[in-house]
Image 1 (cartoon, rainbow, N blue to C red):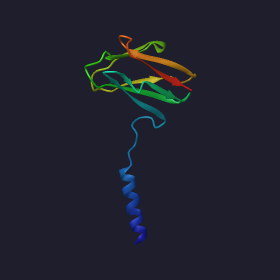
Image 2: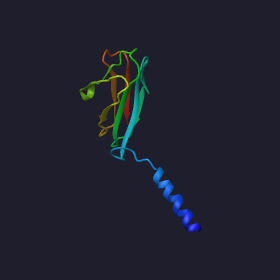
Image 3: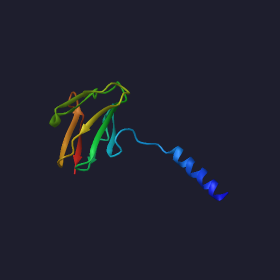
Image 4: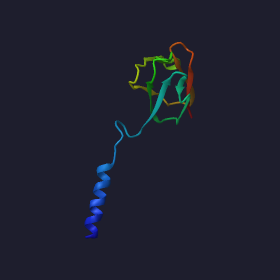
Length: 112
C-alpha cells in the first residue's frame, strides 16, 4: 500500500513539472520597455552562456518602440505587448549598450 501511494505521489509530481521551452541551457531574461525606459536597466550575463533577451513594450507612452544594439548592428521594432527575442553573443567579456530608437533611454548588458 505504501509503495502504491509513493508511486502515485511521484506520478503527480512528474505530471506537474513544467519544461522550459527551447534549449534548457539557454538563459532567457525579460526586459520591459516602459514609459521611463528599460527595466531592468542593466543585465549581467556569464561569459560563454547562451543568452537571449526578451523585450516587451508595455505602453504606447514611450519612445522605446524599438531597441538598438550598436555594437552588434541590431535594430528591432518592439510591437506593444509582443515579445521580441534578441540573441546575445557572450564569447568575450565586455559591456554592450542597448537603447531606444531615439537614443534617449540607454541600458547595458555586462558580460563577465
